[in-house]
Image (cartoon, rainbow, N blue to C red; front, side, top):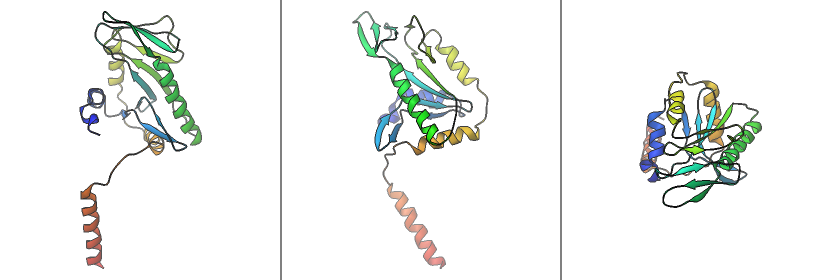
Length: 190
């Protein structure tokens, strides 16, 4: 899909994070033949971090709460957005169920990030980190300072998650040409 070539967030994640992070950008899992879209998944050598970005216009202030919606206050209009914790929990449950079916364990963290807006909250959601405009650079530098090589456990985790992902693809014409050349070469050798 052409939108991925122009997606600034995807480009940012792929260019600014170390190569030891494996990125699953809004993967669609196929569980019991039902597609389920997930949040961004960052697989590091030491853990999985499920990330949800909330980025709004510059003057917007995000008021986080435990309700189903969060309030957005700006000079233009006040509005509500769905609480991103709901999406993070759904993705976490999905990953944990996949791991349970494969008898695997790997630490999972959940993070809500806004690079552009402050997020105010009375209580941080349970086992979820909130990173707002004020402390985004600290979180980002923490990720960039991880100097661990790719680990086999990390690769296995990625492999298991990919096995449950939906793949949408088409055969490229050049693949058919390569296949025909290989078949012709085999016939000539025999």
